[in-house]
Image (cartoon, rainbow, N blue to C red; front, side, top):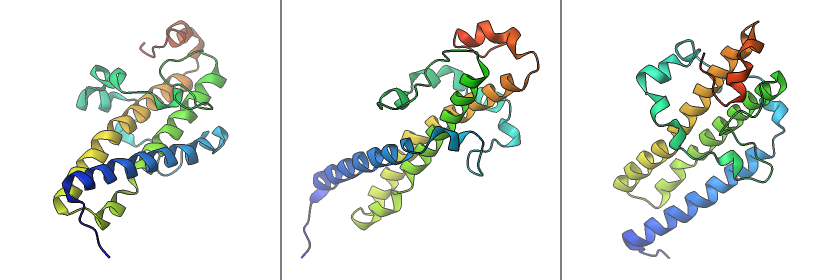
Length: 174
C-alpha cells in the first residue's frame, strides 16, 4: 500500500527525519571519548592550502560570519563550548582542537543520510535537500577547520606563552 502525502506531507516528513537524524549524529559522536579526537584522521587532517587559516580568511571571508553560527557544543550536557577559549594552557588548547575535530565529524555525519531521502522525495526535492544539507553543515565544518588551523599554529610556536593574554581573551590574532 502506498500513500500520497503531497508536498506539505513530504516536507513535514523530511523535517522530522532530519531532526531525528541530526540528534542521532550528535548523540553518537558525543559518546566518543574526546581523547579519540586528539589527533587528525584522514577526514580531519588539514590540507596544505588551509594550514594557517588564511585561505578561509581570504576566500571565504570567514571572520565576517563565523560568529553568527550556533555553537552546538554548548547545547549538549556533556558538550564542550567552542564559542570562546577559556584558557591559554596547552592542555585546554589541545582539548579545544580535539573538540573542533568532534564538531567537524558531527557535521560530516549529519550529511551522510542524504541519499536515504531519495526513497520518498522526487528529483526536485533532492536538489532542495542537497542545498539544505550543504548550507546547514559546510559553514560549520569550515569554522571548525579554520579554528583548528589557527589553534595548531599558536600551539606550534615555541614562544606560545607570550601570546597567552590574547588567547585567554578568546582571540588568536597576533
